[in-house]
Amino acid sequence: MAQSKKVAFVTGATGMSRAAALEFARRGLHVALLSRTREEVEAVIREVEAHGVEGLALQGDISKEDDLVNAYEQIIETWGRLDVVFANAGVNGTWAPIEDLTLEEWRQTIDINLTGTFLTIKYAVPHLKKKGGAIVITSSINGTRTFSNTGSGAYSASKAGQVALMKLLALELAPQGVRINAICPGAIDTEIDENTNREALERIRYPAEFPEGEVPLTHGKPGTPEQVAKLVAFLASEDAAHITGTEVWIDGGESLLV
Image (cartoon, rainbow, N blue to C red; front, side, top):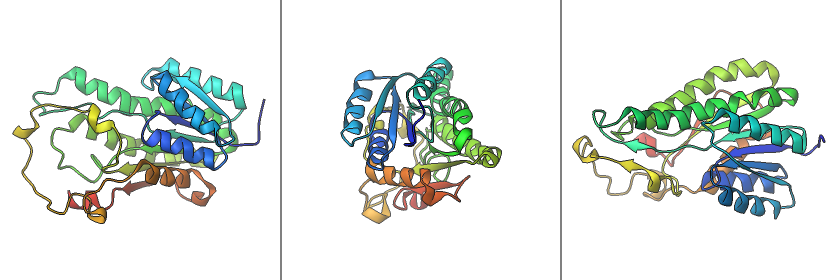
């Protein structure tokens, strides 16, 4: 049954995904959340619903086409509409010298980060075009303004690809009233670094010391998921109605230094 309250779809269930889901809920949007781990999704949805809106817990992998198709079918069946997509799910993958990085490791990162973003957008567009809407992609400072993180070839390529895709789609989707932008976070206090597989980086890393830290605005302190969530909510809102095809760096000046 169609409802008047707007609906947001968020991929991922921890860190910035959780923060964005809760920010959307505080702003009165129903929230659907997709992640590979059902327990994490269900825990965040309980927090979402505590704000007096409806939530929908979805389990799936953004790199698998059928999982995205099924997710959107459930969203439309539940609420009859889709207004906002936050394509945040991704991995750091393996960071290693190019001769050590395997084809399997390269493909895994590209499949999740870039192909997963493509699939997330592809199957959202038919629903967003009905009333207009907004897409926000999580890219990174890596591959867009920072190139000093040697060994991050697969990750940085996937993030640069996301921005290129975003800019192309901004023109393609504008006539249908669908806006698309990208955020490029620097160091944010999440768990993603703990899941990064780093191999032999000492062989290729250029030595550099930043006594005051790598984030000039905060003397090295990372940003928070909540700060990112507010940016995402802004880009998805009517306050950003004339913004599309734009990447926004949220890094406290980190990418200008490193």
